[in-house]
Image (tube, rainbow, N blue to C red; front, side, top):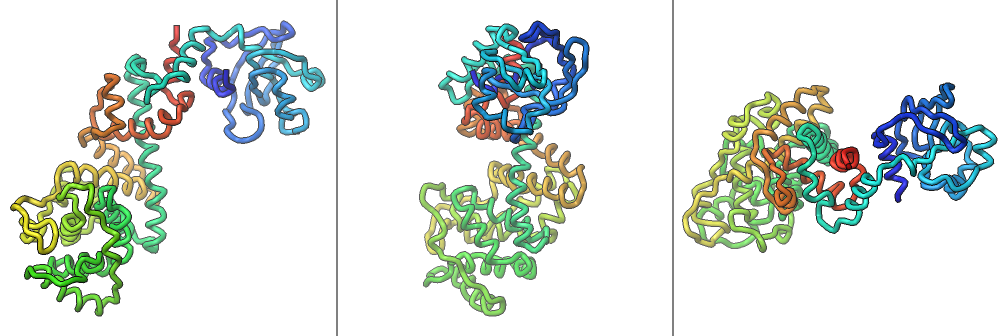
Length: 425
């Protein structure tokens, strides 16, 4: 038995009744459970409890045993003076403080259904990645869908905390902040840090001056990335090298270390050289990404923005001076979806905070719902249990659920467990 379970039972009214008999045979009616307190002090504030038809308004404290009051030294803490009900699983001792202040004790042991405890123990003892296992499919669609919506919002909101840092770094300029975020996510995990460093070292304010010159754009990006500091045989890298030598003096630029980039353990299409060339092509658009999403375009318009095909040189190369079989180097569907999920949607949430326009949140969630569900090791765990995932909004929610609750066995904070406990038979 954990105190957290008693909190859950009280908070979600899992006892399925509101009238009880106290330790001294008094009649107790729970009019209002109160507000759950997550900080120090009593567990529930401003509860309304009727004792023998007398309505009391105050705080409720919950323990496994009544004697835990002494173990936790509440008798010396004035924050607990305004207790109107002491709720325990087992009433094992009469407390002088309860007697002094005439505080009733409600023992829950005889009111909790055995099936509820069995369901709880099953969750706690499960060794599966998702503790509720196949029971998760028993959750009603309304509960499951509304829970996924909340989890999806929570996941995106977590990402906005990092965007705040980028916004501060970019001196409160939306175009600059979104540009660095886009750079970071062009790293597609393995090169995220290197791409972010590239974005911070090479300001968007410089790049947009050369938006109509693809050669100079690539020269700046590849030069600052550290890829042009060697001898080349091919004409194209030599041309970029010459352009960069001119531009690095015009705009004092210090290249980052070439060693920052990772090529191993990644597919050639994901090599940083290819991603940099694709990034250059997206920056070459007449309209910046920020001004595009500010207008809330449909997904098809966003897809056209990222319909990018790098310089013809890259059709037969993955690295400078290394010939390869000809292939398209356009941004693939999966990569595009990743950019929408990890760049555009979080930034729209951030814009809603700073621009005080809540419709950006609705628009962002609508974009997520139009994208196909992601398939990865985390979402596969839900698929194994027979959970259908309809779109990226739901897969993002599942990832959030898996990361924040399932892996930490925080079942009592999950609406799925709440439903299962409430409906245990």
